[in-house]
Image 1 (cartoon, rainbow, N blue to C red):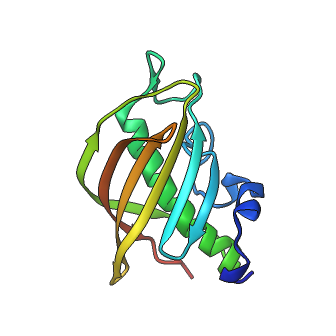
Image 2 (image 1 turned 180 degrees about the vertical axis):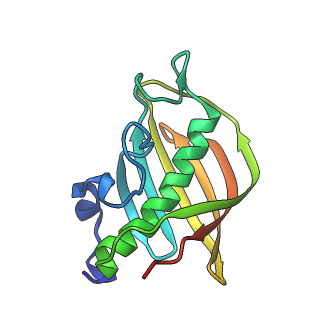
Image 3 (image 1 turned 135 degrees about the horizontal axis):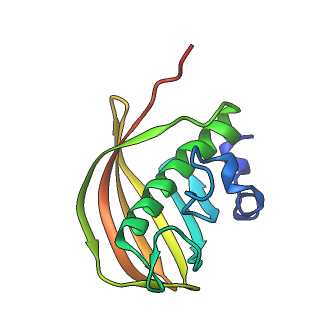
Length: 151
């Protein structure tokens, strides 16, 4: 597949598990809805049975994991569907300026976008934001590293 072939309809049709190293019940994103080399967006409906739901609200730790998995979905999609390779494991090197300004109750739709600022020496610097039903509720800067392929 070429980068030019990526469309929202195609993205919505893929199983998110094919682009993530995480497995249930620790999957915190539902659908990859936008992808390009420097950006990705996921959507997730907050469910009552989610591990990070406390008192009917998705926790701030859950929001951070949702951001991390949106980063993983960007890399995973590229590896699986553009390069035709296995999904690589990534690591969070740092989180900066993490701010939560709202809550995400059960049933709400989270839209999380990660935009790459810079990729240097195997590290990716990005900015992330989470919206709940269209209202911004969290954001941060994140530094990521991807595990080298073995072999």
